[in-house]
Length: 130
Image 1 (tube, rainbow, N blue to C red):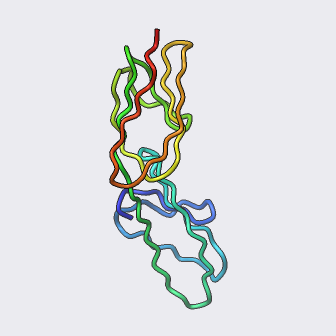
Image 2: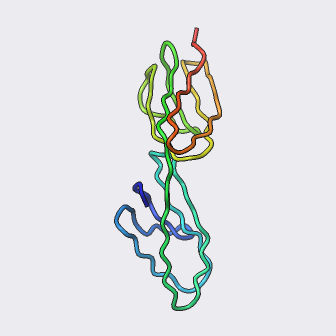
Image 3: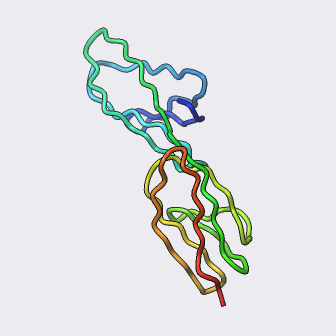
């Protein structure tokens, strides 16, 4: 993997990249998953492992920088997970995908759905809290 990821196979934790993670699996069907919670990256692959086979799985995680902005300031969350701190500006790196981004100021909330594509830095500006 090109970013650190927790590797699981059918829910069993095997280790973390970037060092190679070796899974010793009996023949059969598996879902191999890599996850990096900080970058909101989750990748999975279905693997049908025949007897005696060795397979190499690599996860590529195309990503982009996203700048979140709100005035005067607020708490940000991505897909329901709060980001640390209360500020007017927050920079995060996200893997490609669709995200629900929120800015909160007390009981006030602004929400947007964004599509992140690799290499395309983007600004997400929320309407001013008043």
